[in-house]
Length: 409
Ligand code: 7TS
Image 1 (cartoon, rainbow, N blue to C red):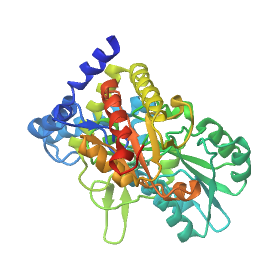
Image 2: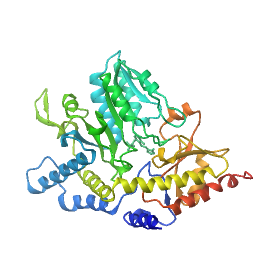
Image 3: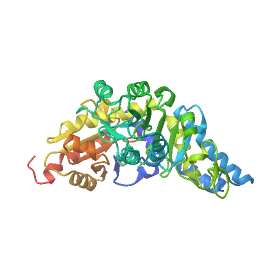
Image 4: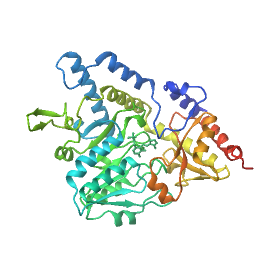
């Protein structure tokens, strides 16, 4: 009872969750935003709005301070060594493209290899397909077992002397599996390759410490971390970022410009061309402060409890197969499943008719679905503000799906 009361007390922080007839279980796509995040964005526009990093009047300097404070909040959140290791982007996709266009194109050549996993979201695959096509490098895949795990044997076989970049997801957005980052980093670094971690699905669910993980780059989106849509982050080790060419060019990323040439600004501004999303950065900083106020211990505990309950309930329903591990603690709140004889779009439409929002399809991870020989699936993704009551409502609705599609059971 105590836990339920607690989760209800978090819910009141999220205005959208008051909407009638809504059970929101698509948190891996985007999370809902607490009031403090909305207020921080509003405060930026009502109190500090000027173009940051440009004007020398008081208001513009306050706008700049707000933006740079947000950078320091992200630095602390990731435990990066320096604030200039934090580059603001639009989202994970842009962060990974920055890494591929800037680091990838300037460091790869014909005999090199780029390693990804078969579980990558398209956002951490297409940029590397592009880099491989432009440089002649080869793309190689780490394949996973049925439970989503990647064996040490695979790591040793695929990562080798030719590997220059290992770009892997931290948590699969389909299977919920956590990849063995520490082991990947160790083997990659032994081979003098850099590791780029797609943390889009991990940062909202567990502490992520870039120094402890010793990754070279890390990307995430603010909107999956209870922050605003339109702000993302690329962390990079300072010594690597300093050597990299800019990705986008234009205003705010220069020190001086001449007719035929330009001198670029120092980090982090070299990578932040054009007017920045300062309101988004303020919102993201508020989201991080909000998460800090709850703490990952409480978040993980609540999400674990809900995931275990959901898995137990799903297993009772005839015809349902959950992809990935049998252990709920290996799912990071993500349960993707098929229902025998029912297309995932129908599953999602039936759940929607009961007010339950889930995602159906290939989840932007088509190579994984090809590898698993499954055309598509339905995904439930939980957040700490979900409740046991919502999980029971999901189970009840799912229990009726096959009958509503005309099957006897
Ligand atoms: N990487 C992973 C692992 C993701 O899950 C996603 C988005 C991205 C990258 C891209 O993030 P964006 O903010 O740049 O779009 N994943 C999902 C999802 O699973 N359902 O909708 C978006």
